[in-house]
Length: 441
Image (cartoon, rainbow, N blue to C red):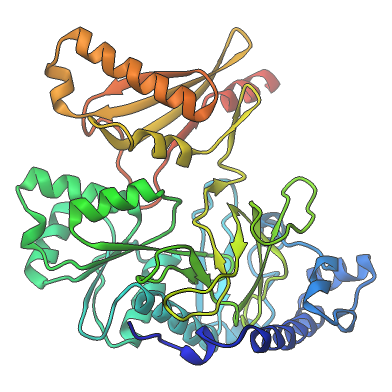
């Protein structure tokens, strides 16, 4: 499989670290001179850019969080004047003001190159037809991978999200060979194909490049089986750039190669904020090394992962990160037990007769937390006797309780009952939040 930029993706590690330090020093001077919030934070710590003389010294620098975006909304973290900004994207803003990100012309060129790496690593070449079912607009997913696909010379179908039956018709008629979307939407496409009577053999799909939400190895196997494709993961976030931060290679599918020539990464303990050694799970922190419009220093992603360096069969020397297991702000605590939605998904996919569509509902009754999981079952279950249904519920309940370490109540719902998302799936309903707000009012 060709590597898009072998001079960087396969660079000897010692040379890569020299390049990172050079770029880190440069970006620190830029933010100190041009971004008032960074200058203020560094001055408060008594740190000047020239004090950072090694990559290890990064631990002395202040963190950046989403609160910094909100406090400096909309353009207060930009390092260049607005006349140099050629593109603006933003998050959905579901928890308050959206985070606004800007790009210079060079930033867009860098972004296209990095998403071209993602697609190349996932098997896509100039001979492929790339079907992009991410939403276009302020969300970064659609545009980011669109320009990467064009950069490698592939044919791009910018379908955007929604109208799933139309998506399937287009894939079938236009000969799409690569599908780009969220993993949960890929499963939904497979579901609708079955309803329409469209077999995977009628499509020319070969590759799936999925991101924007955590997904498990079990879900990968489910998608690959249902759609008859090879599925790879890729990772990015709007604040840092969008897709293109890290990506799996088709050869190994064992961890995501981080674009270290553009991003310096750390993993920290989210509670103590101390750096953790390679191989330990914690919160991913990213420093951008080449962004012009919006350079970020030690940005706390809230994503839980680990980083590790190993020899890869693809030939890339870039450090890897594990598939994120969840987010610190997605983690729910039930009776003192930490639970991530990915744990529920992994456990459910081990049980035949149920689908990977589920919702976790957390409530509080008689001052005690209660965990309930709503699971879509196959049609046949609802035609069985009540005894058979109870046996299925008992089986799922026992399996989830063992997997999660906390008593779980299971509710079976009919197929297609739970809401489908064209973007990131909504997995958790925490009714305790309502109680907290009610008690305060």
